[in-house]
Image (cartoon, rainbow, N blue to C red):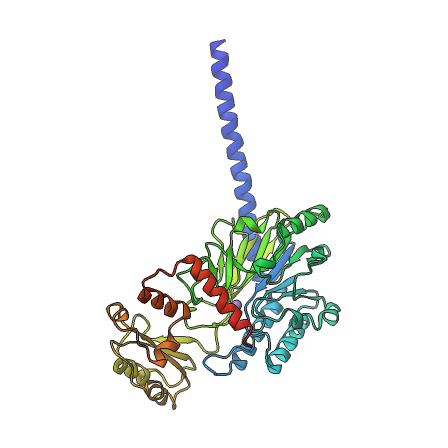
Length: 439
Ligand SMILES: [Mn+2]
């Protein structure tokens, strides 16, 4: 009996081991074949037997954006041409643009015309593709939908504002391909409770063929890397949008395509399912990262998305001199003189000054670039910490260079109170309100 029990224990242990090994080799085999096949598909441009759906995910184009009054139309057009080339090469089933199509709610006619021509070029590059475009906090929700009906004829779907009366109208079924839940930017005070989960539950009940479920949103997600945005000390609210936790976004999607944060990233803790594509074009000097669009391939509902990035090189880079830290104004001028004549970049100077910059500093710096292809933008004046509190006087240059949150925090410190997270949230909201109502 003792021996039998021993043998049985051995058998179970061996069996478990054999089972585990078999399972391991089975899954390793599947993964290796998938990898080889993906490689072959990419190399020979074959139709993929594994990925039933391919998405090109992008956001935050900010068409019409100017940098320090310089027109950026040629850069924006170049970026759109590059996306059209990628559409042609990658042949995605879906193109998702997750908000901030335009930089302002009143975009110039040239930017609007650029958008319609770009959409047509994408469709011509891949007539079988569907395009879904949601509005961001920079867009006008009503203008976003002006051509909603004619666009539908070309499988282009626009979502400008949340339809509170019929939230299920935000569910789009792309036959035999995917379900898309397309949510434009909604201020959190107007967001209906449980909206995300109710839409996901509705899709779950309709999704009898196990199609991939994709959701689109334009918001801030807690814990993301917001390099490039102007209030990096405040994680609770970025660009005027308060952070949502990923649990609040519901359960049941295979991929959540996000817009708003400009740095491309897959959210930590999302098991590779929640991602910001980031902007394909640098919008500010602090965006010191590679700009790109994302390609996402999903086999079926509940399978893991396969994500890759395609870089979008900028026609004009944003360059800060010196590359790290600050220097005095004389050294900064020398760096400008040494900057190559033929690089068409935007230039910011990081200058440290204990007192004040000369009143004509900006003009002096600009003069040094007149025979160069670069575009001089501004002097980012920085006062060493020890001088910051003693002397609160600022020149106009310095005032322009500092972010509003830094100015107000310094003011609070000088008055002897802490500008805490609640005040920062309130301030970000007030700033957004002023911005929205001054266009
Ligand atoms: Mn944006």
